[in-house]
Image (cartoon, rainbow, N blue to C red):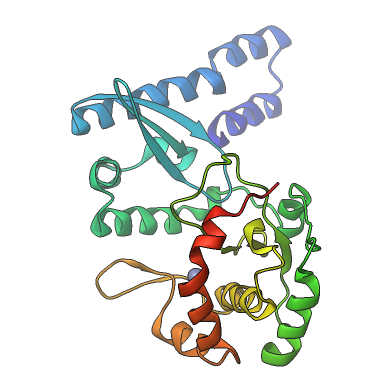
Length: 266
Ligand SMILES: [Zn+2]
């Protein structure tokens, strides 16, 4: 809210009487009210394009800028406040992205976010990590030992990341798929699925998953020529093959995926 503050400064400098100051203040737009107005305007703009009901929630997240879900009467879209004053092209891309998550609209949104990243609140990786529970020592595998050994062996100890087992999944039913690891560039945290912490899961397999996530620290996601986000560029894939047990780990995964999908954790 730069404009109101500036105006208030002028008032102070010119030393109006306090009564005058109070009147001027009352005329300033109240931030919360203004936000509601902007939000309603954006809802209207999206509704016109999606031709269905749209609820917008505005947030100040540092990482995920856009999420959306289908609700009974239309769409619920959660957005960073940078989108409140987005130009036509971006609102159209937003609607298109909600409708079909296509590469072209996703690229338009990415460019908009990149241009407006000054509005994203800065939270240090350390601050983000403080919100997480970091538990690298499992019952069967110690991720910090695995991470350190790989860091020495393959990266000259240069990967400055934190590793932990992820939280136990909420559902206890067998999974249809499993995300064995993830890497957050914001917090620099590698998360490993707790289903890997079983005696039957060999260490070289856990090492492979950790190695893969360490490579995400080295190779950031980028946009391919077709406009799609590429999280595993060719140089990433090539580098991954340098892992000493690459083929054995792949073979183990093929033979034992079921074990990981059915593992009860937590
Ligand atoms: Zn990956």
